Length: 201
Length: 201
Image 1 (cartoon, chains in turn green, brown):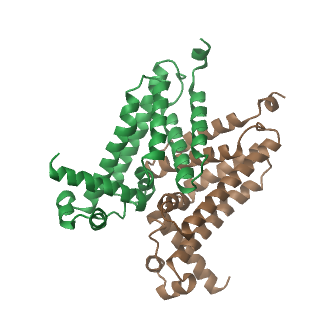
Image 2: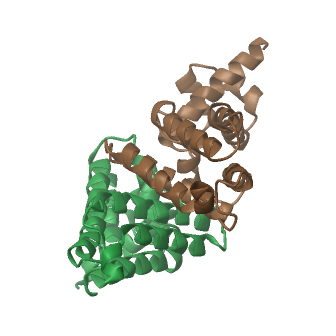
């Protein structure tokens, strides 16, 4: 990476943290310059506009999620094991790697009523996430571990709900039992999906 | 109600809508005056400070939720029927009565990192909600419809997760299947809680 890339990466790391803590909608190049100790004109040269900065921040958070959660999960064996790896990576990252919470969760409620390029990108990111969960779940169906009539998109919305319920209890309520409950909810989802014939065999 | 009470109620109704759409953290007396077509000095006389306005807006939204969802559910017969009434009232309100989304959901991610009186009130409101869900669930245990070893707080976090997953898919993604999936997830939660001996009897 050249010096410009370093600066850009450092700025985006700071921007992700500010956006998760205080909101993506209010993230401005001026705020970021102050927080990162960089010059406003230098940051303008990188990002050009508030909207471009917001989109670059989402792209950076998306890459980070894919690197930490999705790609390692996809490297595990197909089937229930891969679904479990996805859940483990996700809940561990939510607990340890996002000190200011999940940017995609806070941005979703901020932008659901704000039409524009940022909302459009958030919709694509969330559809991609749900599709990726459904695709991981399907490997369990094709391996015969999950019922053939189980609905992968149902599982995706359900797992997303388990994670949202966890983040809510963990972040707002600081509930020490939040993670254990999320694990039991996930176990119940898996139990509902399992192919009982395959278990009996 | 006197004229002052009318003004206050109208202002809070407007404030709830603005806060759900654009955020509670950014809600100011100035913004509200512009949106409601009221004088800023008149609103200051009612609310005194931005924080007092935020707390009054939360109180108004809480009353509205209790009137629409919680009290009618508590008026139904104890047990599974009451749990179903709670879910039906809640998902119907989320679909029909909150055009700008759920204020408590958006405020939760806005304030989870902002210590102060608004965050403290949000925590109390969410704990009250989870306790109320658990209490409704317990009537099903004492009526013998749910397993005696079922965990009411587990059910509360799970049901909250189902609603958060629904709101997310409905509000951000405008997914027409979001509600049907939330209903199936709720049915699975109930199935997991049921007392099989009572059903066999």
